[in-house]
Amino acid sequence: MKCPSCQNNGTRVIDSRPVDEGRAIRRRRECEECLYRFTTFEKVEETPLIVVKKEGIREEFSREKILRGLIKACEKRPVSLAELEKISLEIEKSLRNLGYSEVNSEKIGELVMDKLAAVDEVAYVRFASVYRQFKDINVFLEELKELIKKEQ
Image (cartoon, rainbow, N blue to C red; front, side, top):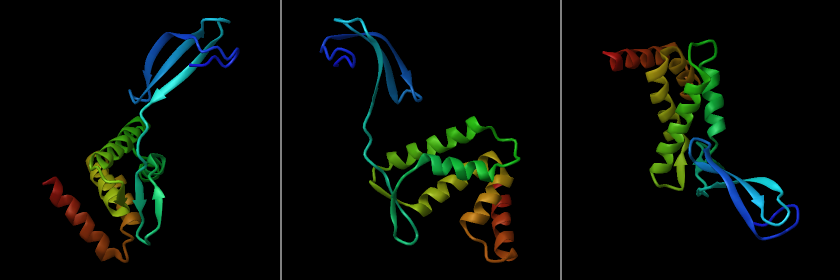
């Protein structure tokens, strides 16, 4: 690793620790020549995961978009931000474990709804009403009946 101060190639690692839930390593380094200290990060380069939307548009997967949707669905509900972050990370892991480079947005929506149903029913119904775009109250009632069946 080149020193950013004097450009010397000799540096040594002083401290290492995992960051980003173990997905990266933070290293504190010191130049052997000028003793300048700096920090580097090392992480696995993941292949991009592409989301295919209903309209056929393709975009890169974003865990932050899922988290924003979860936060909106759980607004004024007793669900912690840490729990929502955990859910979004679990969804990303399960999508990457499928081994596909592209995934349909419907699959993502179903995963989000499955996770929300287990955490908070009201948040689940809120998310489902937006995601499934309920046309009228009867479709909404059918969804509620399905939720009640799952609980029994």
